[in-house]
Image (cartoon, rainbow over all chains, first blue to last red; front, side):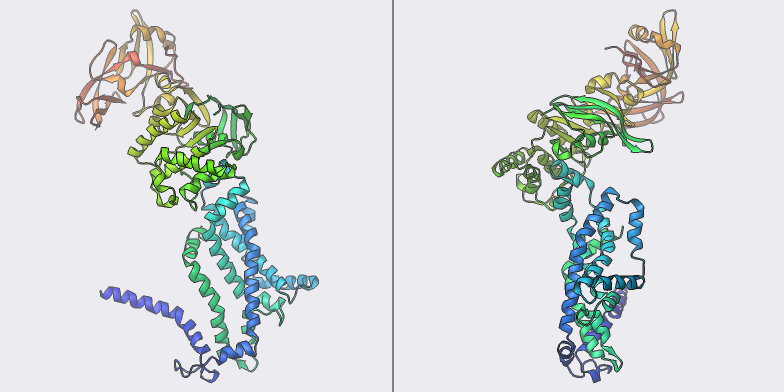
Length: 266
Length: 366
């Protein structure tokens, strides 16, 4: 009994150490600016921070921008990632070199790419456009999603495709009608991971974007002004920024766990 | 329905590794052909080459009148039953069976009819709307068969379809498959490493080793006349006893000296193996040819009992004599204790003789 209690207390402490900062951010978003650093839990409740954020700071546009680029970049990169991952898994396309290159691209610090990409974008007239941001996020997502999906496809028995092809499907038909539906949990899980990656991206959004195309991370950074950090508004923005991730993870939790356990951890 | 002809097909995996090497085999129309061999002998690769799932590096394959060597799997009109069953996990049993027909544009009414008929034959009616995940191994096996049946293919290719079932179910499914074959009359190619399945199911069996075909023939004929020591040993359990031997021509016929088994040969064997006296040989004796009682053509073998397995209907005994272990299958009335010295009687009328150098059999006559 005592043992059980001790282990529970340990777990509660661990959970709180993760959850408290998030809960505190949420709390701060609901108190006036002057009370934000006080230790009272709820000195007075207000939605003023949210009103300021959406009214004065145009946060709604930032939010929409983030949703658009994060969603579109995943939608854009997913078909390519699925096909490339399948080719890597089934046909060993490009051999070990191609696999290594895919992984290695994830090790490159993004800042090393920032300047060349900016020059390219300026020449192509893609700066300060959602199209430009969507494209670069899709490019960043592609190797990451490819790698995860490759693991998924490798875990699908090859006999399934053999069965489909002797049943009358083409290789493409077997991929489309059998492999993709079977890999759906993995695809969904990696889509969410890709979405989170794009949603949180800051560097390229800052360099390639402008006031019109600023995403949530850029808008939040802008609240740290020379007159000080508007911590309550930042908290309100962060609370809202977490929201879509919470919703997405809630719906796909089951698949995400499955996805992480037999897809990427290979 | 169609014959399948393999014309010196090979599968070269590169760097000198062959899955199948120069295999030629004619499988007759409506025949039940069993490909038998140990793991890695190339039997599954051969099957996959017929199905079109494995590249053919040289040689040709014909199904019926068509040369299918370069055809895609879907154009060969064969159905494969995989060891893993390979049921589509996201589809119900009914959809699994429908998939192949849908791909081929079979009219919907015909699809329903065939699914109904197959479900009837295989006893799948209660499970048609379940997903494969909710079925037992035996039921999945039936669905895999049903999925092949409804296609009405030219030939059925089965890759160890019974190996994931428990012993009792496996025995039942053996019978059912043979019945199904009789009922459908289709050409069937069945891959297995289980000699019992091969003996009981095949019209003919094809024994493979290291990517090559060793022997093809009706099961009993292969059992009676194995072409070499590999086939002789593989096709039975316990495996055939093999003992280094020397034949000696004497004044009154031939005699054999094979460790604990030595003495004169019966007249028929003496004349059959007269030419073998010149070189070292291997004597082959099946476990059931070591008898408990002497007969007209037996030689006595005495040894110490080292293992005994009482199976109820019969007993499996191994004796050790002069450094040689001999396995015997005897009646249930003979069950000695471990360590007992007993005398068995080798029926030399049933002996096999192989060349020591190559392992090839001396012709045994009919």
